[in-house]
Each structure stands twice: as C-alpha cells, then as structure tokens.
Image 1 (cartoon, rainbow, N blue to C red):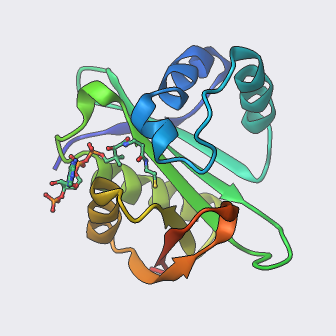
Image 2: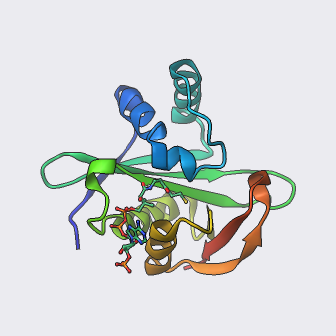
Length: 160
Ligand SMILES: CC(C)(COP(=O)(O)OP(=O)(O)OC[C@H]1O[C@@H](n2cnc3c(N)ncnc32)[C@H](O)[C@@H]1OP(=O)(O)O)[C@@H](O)C(=O)NCCC(=O)NCCS
C-alpha cells in the first residue's frame, strides 16, 4: 500500500487547494458544480483553516509530491446534529494509482484521534464509481439514497 505522509493544511496551501477545487472532475462530482473564483476560495479557505469544526488534511507521497486532500466537517445542523462529513480529492496526475482508499483510511484515523470514535458520512453521486469503490474498500457501507445538498446522492457510513 502507498506510503503517504499527512499534515493539516496551512495558509501556504491556498493556491494548491484552489487548483484542486477547480479540477473539472472535482467540480462535476461536487454538489455545487460551478467554478470557484479565487476571491470566494480565499475567503472560504481562510475561514476553514481556523474553524474548529473543520479538519483539512493534505497528503504527500514518498517524493514529497502533494497527492490529494481529505476534509472532515462537523455540521451541527438540525437533521443530524453530530454528523461528520468526509470529502476527498486526488490530484488529477495521481489518479488511478489506488491512493484514494489509503487517503480515506488514514484521514479517518486522524479524524477519530481528534474528534473521538465518531461515525463518518460520505455523500457520493451515483455515477462516481471511483469514489464509491474507494470508500467501500475503506470500510464505508451504503446506508441509502440521500437528497441532502439538493442533489441525489448515495450516503455511505463508516462507524468503525
Ligand atoms: C474519486 C477519487 C478520489 C478516486 O481516486 P483515484 O485515484 O481516481 O482512484 P483509485 O486509483 O484510488 O481507485 C479507486 C477505485 O476506483 C476504481 N476506479 C478508478 N477510476 C475509475 C473510473 N474512472 N471508473 C470506475 N472505477 C474507477 C479503481 O479501480 C479502484 O477500485 P478497485 O480498488 O476495485 O480496483 C478521484 O478520482 C478524484 O479526486 N475525483 C474527483 C473528486 C471526487 O470525485 N471526489 C469524491 C467526491 S465523493
């Protein structure tokens, strides 16, 4: 399995996250499919870096190349007050190498170290086969269909 090093994101990662966020596949598989402006991104990223309910993890390979990111968000909203949502993207040049599953697994371990024995939810569009495979391999189980984010998706849960 790929040896990956992970750390929390920092201010100097803003441009990298901006590039990743506007990757065409990432936008297509997101719930807001519109391109993101630099201004919107900068405000969002600055806020998230210091948000106690957000965990931004960035992963590097042995050659110290940034290969992807995993994000966890605690969303204290009425329907599921303790919900923790995971999101992932792998750098387009690094896709297809089987790195998504280790990213998810290592990310979940860091998340639980910080936030305890939480259950983690992934909302995935039904046509995103690579993501579905990666989350299944990481031990996520299909819970059902969801209309959260106003777009049909599949909810996968990892309760450990
Ligand atoms: C989804 C994503 C993280 C997967 O990472 P990846 O590097 O492409 O995938 P991996 O190489 O780790 O492969 C994961 C699994 O998907 C399969 N897979 C990869 N690309 C695929 C494709 N285009 N279609 C179907 N299956 C695919 C792999 O064979 C593997 O399954 P296996 O373990 O049974 O062989 C990556 O494609 C990505 O960043 N996409 C854009 C953002 C995104 O969709 N994020 C997830 C939102 S829920």
